[in-house]
Length: 391
Image 1 (cartoon, rainbow, N blue to C red):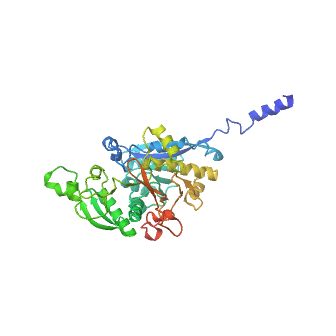
Image 2: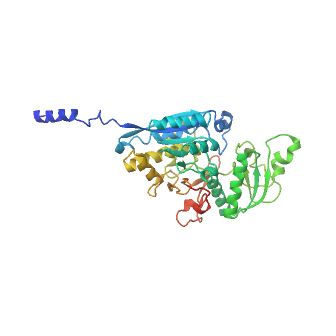
Image 3: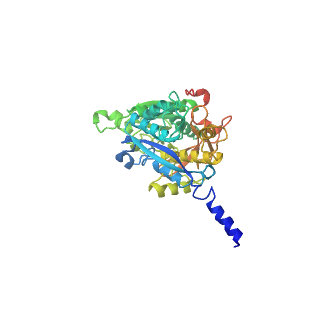
């Protein structure tokens, strides 16, 4: 090396913009969860109900961090999660305020619907975006919607629309509904009745069930007695899953069971074998030590959406990122085959629904033949003219 070259090399090492000066800044994504959230109780997760979570979805967000190490290079940032936990709305909102004051503008919310609605309402004047990763309640996308609350997990309406499409496709046009005693059970049953009416499935009867061994309640706890009559399929609305798992192969007539058990509508299933899904499932299982469920996928997808917005815009500027995430140019790959984007009218991520058993994916909705004028994914869930959301 000549003396001139050595001098030039030394000047470059000491110049502004050197490796040390170009150290990327942290792009922090907040993550909020409820302390003692009953949805993740040990007994419940150990039971491995088909539609339930197997653990908290934070592992899904962690999995994404391993995939997006270079997404922030153009904006000079690296991604980091800040996990906060609170018992109620007051503690959780304080965490939002604290992180927002430190510059955080994106938050994943792993919260029950009531807490999520409270946090969204209280923060609506803030410059931030919230991502719902674990509450399927239609009200959050309807009357309780907020312009800064984006829904990554599919809604109950989307899931039951997928089921109704499948029933019509199989020509199972008459359904018996078994409905549990809780408010969440009623929400599930109402969602199915709406979807059935929308797609032409006739509900022949809705019968309440009780989780009990009391012989005096035989008509509400005995599956054979509950399933008398003629119909094509049984829909079970059981948010806890304890009763539902006893229904398949116990009905009075040999009939398929759908809903909470049997064949369920899911955001994700470990057995999905197409579109790169096995690779994602493998990465998640190495992180969490268990199969991925819908809420895990939603947390993974939320972080990925934020990171891809940073990559596409080469910016960490919040208005720029918000405009991209909510705009018509957003295209996301959720490893389910379709291009995903957020609906303008209720901030719901449009996506396919996987119809699966405990160990297999039977079909993916929208089912072939169910078409929409602009996007077939919008056959799942309410269209703009049907929505109660007024942003």
